[in-house]
Image (cartoon, rainbow, N blue to C red; front, side, top):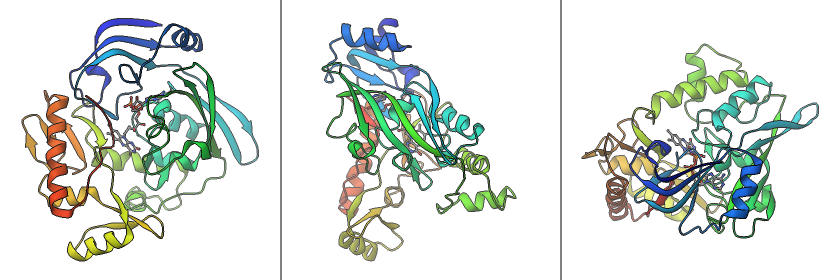
Length: 339
Ligand SMILES: Cc1cc2nc3c(=O)[nH]c(=O)nc-3n(C[C@H](O)[C@H](O)[C@H](O)COP(=O)(O)OP(=O)(O)OC[C@H]3O[C@@H](n4cnc5c(N)ncnc54)[C@H](O)[C@@H]3O)c2cc1C
């Protein structure tokens, strides 16, 4: 286990904002996890579990300990004619897992290509993209209860997955360290191409009847074009969730604001495009010092160089205020905010 005191977190968050941790612990093995659980009295008010830092905004320092879960490992645990169960440790890189699954001839997560971050964080907000979300393929989550050190196992339905949400992000926030997940992947590939842009991209690549690898390649191309690369310009992907409202409310807003994209989620609720509302309020490409809104995508807040987390948060608040006053809609941030 590696330890550092008064450690910088700037290179450990994709916004690249300056922040410090009282102590940084890097767990690299199952044994490290055990030692950590017996030695450390984790307090979620003071301490923090960190993965790849791609869904977090440090608007302040972490006084206590930041724990990096870098425990690696993945293996196929059951292999039938079509369905394959794969166990993956929380410290694995998500996109590398997608590439590995494709190399094994497995499909199911190709639409989630190039999402940054580590496997342990993927269930937190039920990562999703291009018409697929983790909840579609996850079987179970293994975790350590930080207060008691007990090992816990959560089946799919116990995880309370929702749109960019799960029990680990809501009712049980800060209670568990996710150590491993089990996925159900397929040998027989069924393409999920309904999401806008994927079919067009494949056509542009000259592909008619795509393989899972080709779908992954198309999504990588789309994402590289549409989203700023955090290695170049700090960001955490979408900063706001698409608001989910009552269908009647959505219908009235669509009437009042021509062009507002509304997506039905079930018979009672509908999702509104946060990006559209933010763009209509004039924020796309806006810059306030080094904090800004990406030119490519109105949902993505960026650090052009030396913005602090606080400055990015102030910009997010200003965006939230203008959307509220124009549409009466409350925007919710997607990343974890550390104050
Ligand atoms: C360019 C870009 C594009 C993105 N695109 C998408 C997208 O398409 N879809 C999407 O869903 N997300 C997207 N994201 C957000 C982000 O990549 C995902 O949410 C990812 O799962 C975060 O992983 P991480 O390891 O970086 O988590 P971190 O940012 O390190 O942590 C996020 C949260 O999870 C907690 N956490 C982390 N690891 C563990 C663990 N092992 N146990 C318990 N809690 C833990 C942290 O405490 C924190 O609350 C994007 C981000 C960027 C920068």
